Image 1 (cartoon, rainbow, N blue to C red):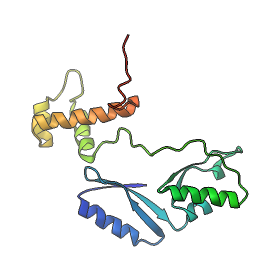
Image 2 (cartoon, rainbow, N blue to C red; image 1 turned 180 degrees about the horizontal axis):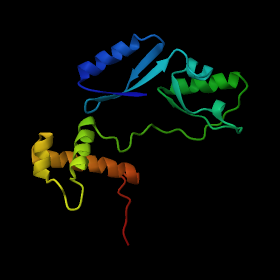
Image 3 (tube, one colour; image 1 turned 135 degrees about the vertical axis):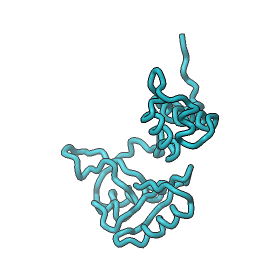
Image 4 (cartoon, one colour; image 1 turned 180 degrees about the vertical axis):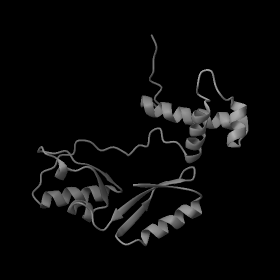
Length: 177
């Protein structure tokens, strides 16, 4: 898995260049957001036959496990790839049991700009008590208006807290006695 950052035309140019590299079988572009695009690069020489025959990436591979039965976690692009893997295992006489299927989540993922601004804020002491730099001073350093900087920092803080707490605003399940 890769993550490209930049304007859409440069990320698509980079993706096209990666596709032309020796050993690259496929490049799958994820949804672009805030000048960041996740990529799944499938190589010609995967570790196992199942990865070769379906566009998957092993997260936990049973081939590396010392115990049996071994768990196998992987990332797939399409449901059909998942079915192909199960079919291939079955045809090889390997029994499998699906325990869980879930979407890939990118919790607390900051945009490139948020990451840059938060890193600068930390380095300059914005989050210290007492603050070593004010919002207005920090806005001059990063080159945005104080109101815009406040929005960027709050949005970044929200993403970080949602990831840390495992809560999204829609859940609203927190109750106090």
